[in-house]
Length: 162
Length: 278
Image (cartoon, rainbow over all chains, first blue to last red; front, side, top):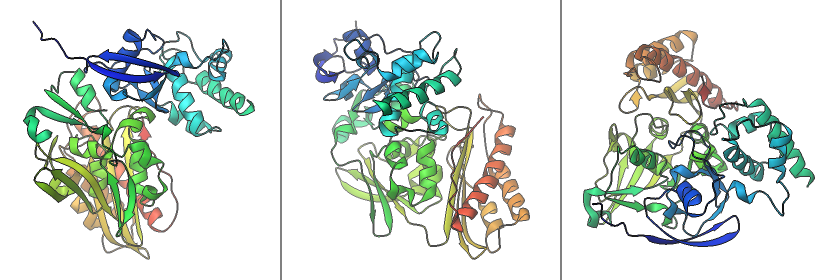
């Protein structure tokens, strides 16, 4: 029988909401989000730090949440795809991905949108090369990247106007 | 803490290698000590003709640092490691302490005069990078020791360097890489440091390529000699990234390209370099 694993108390702010949890130290951040907080918008694609489907913002920085332990997020601010929409209004990034057909199956989309949010927060007017570099850690296996690129350019424009 | 917990304990820096290794059960430490909560372990500063990096300084912080970019080969390295998400977590100290044969930092920093500071309950010592990196995944660190700082001496006037790595896609390790640091006086190459990455258990110094360049202007002929020397010095394994023969040729081509960029930079020409993708 495996011995009982001691749980660790942590506090996080997820999409602006303070959460207190007791978790196993081995738990990954993505598992905390999906299993403990029911935020299943963050996807697990490869679980090997490759595909970027699990990208979230940790204290404003895009990270692969399958490669961060949940206990490491103690005291941190986390943004997931569920935090993009405000008052029933889609975030300009969400709207742009829809309008530009920047998705087909949608599996990689939450990660790509969070990578976009990180990019535009640091660089509101990225050129094409900068966009390609910023999403190089996000793998899409159906749309192809052309419409994703258009979506990010459209989102950048919309957010500048806002 | 490391001393108390013994050899079964592992320090966790950025976690971008250790966490994937634990998931694959390749690493199974009894204790994990998270270093990320140690204040003051992430910094980039200039001091006494050296650049100093706190062990926990993230690749992304180095990528965007003007101070660090004053040595262009350091920016080449930081800006090309994996992808944004990994660069936001991964650290320079973690990369060196892991000593993965495919890691980027060791290859790059070998071309410069680099020392690492190691801390333990017994005290502190400074180890030159070539002595620190002993073998694949093996460093001079004792189990109760932590890498605390990376110290890189500024190269002399007339220096130029470049790091070129070839990758199949952003998140993966390079197939092969080349780091070159030159010192020019006029057109004459006074000093050369040339290392290959990913094609041996540790970064491989290509002494014959260095001597082919030294004492003369970089010429098509010396470039070819350097390229051939790099091919001969490479000791790659065939794997999913390519056959040994392919990697050997690739290493040669990367050295040639890195020398050309290093030479242009040494002459004051700003050249942007990024990793190359298949």
